[in-house]
Length: 209
Image 1 (cartoon, rainbow, N blue to C red):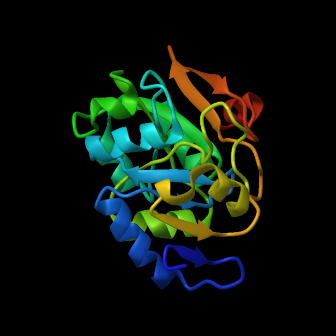
Image 2 (cartoon, rainbow, N blue to C red; image 1 turned 180 degrees about the vertical axis):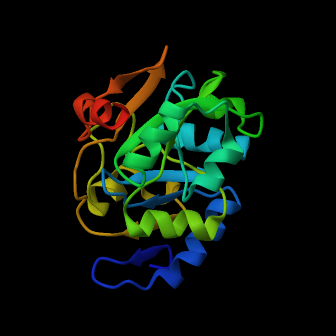
């Protein structure tokens, strides 16, 4: 298959240039992260993001988080970042945590369901990080499953869901954690968990205090 890359046992990350270009051009790629598999596209291309919603059968009222490779990318996407938000990112990025930040105009409204905030995550998994680096753009990435179904943790079950609707598949073996990232938002100076993952509110509070 020319739309499949097996990185389960090798670290030939140079081969990620091809799927990175597909993402840049608005195509859809399935790839592993340390939490669950993601299905991603160019997070700055509203038409690509609309296609992603359609493929996932996801309601347009549900925002999609952006995956980034470094802090410089975050500064291009988010504004008015507080000291507490910086502390959280410094402690848990890269890792299985998504933080809600105030978005800049560069992010299409469809990504945030017309909201003024955006979820940002810097994944720990090497394949995901390298893919973002080669793409040179934030990747809009929900979990790789049809909405309402269980999140995909291996490539075989994901292929059954999406088939040829996805332009490229990257196989990194079974997901390490198997659950989605913790989603945190700082409200009135205090972190609030919007979705529980492997990182707890106690761990976050410890970092802040």
